[in-house]
Length: 152
Image (cartoon, rainbow, N blue to C red):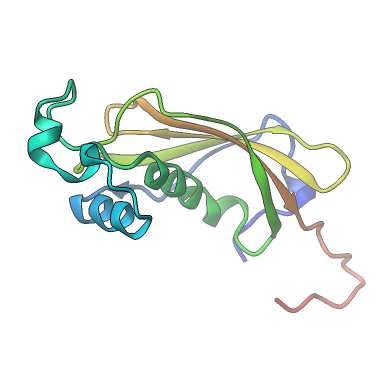
């Protein structure tokens, strides 16, 4: 199990996640069509060419999912109970097919309830922030050493 337990997620902990991911045009088209989003800015190269961006933008909800997903192996893999919600999501710069995203996560708070607040920052290959997401997650506490382990 790679995730961290509640007790290990101290405020101030910063994790620079090891896995990166280059976004493809296929990622964008599949996600956009699977979620029934007909926005031509994501799907129509001719339409997008006439915008300030000059080319299709990657669907921002794909970007959000990717940023959180890239953080899972080092933080919450096998140690989370539930994602409780997002208090903030910002997309300060666009993502385009061909951009490679990496993630840095800071633990902001850990009240004594098993709930941790994470701030995930997705950055592109130029270290521009493309997504900032603050979310709360309910985390498992580390099992007692004298107790039998839990099966998951």
